[in-house]
Length: 101
Image (cartoon, rainbow, N blue to C red; front, side):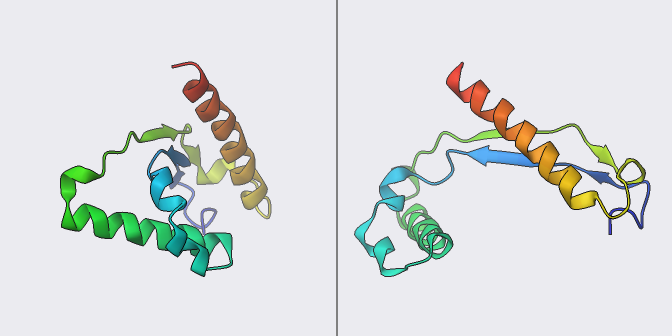
């Protein structure tokens, strides 16, 4: 799809600190077996808490953005490997920035 519109820009972003550890470790989360399902349940629990008591959930969110990649610069058939490469490099930078505030 990115190659179909050469003028489009692909922007990779990584976030951390969105889900509070106390919701990820909640005993109810263990009802689900798959890690993705556990995370989703923890997110729903946190969201419910935020709706009921907005000031009780305080997160410290970090967001990192990669440089935009132009659709025309991505080689046909190799879009996903290019995106993975961009994301891996961004994740390294993101984690380094968190380690050295």
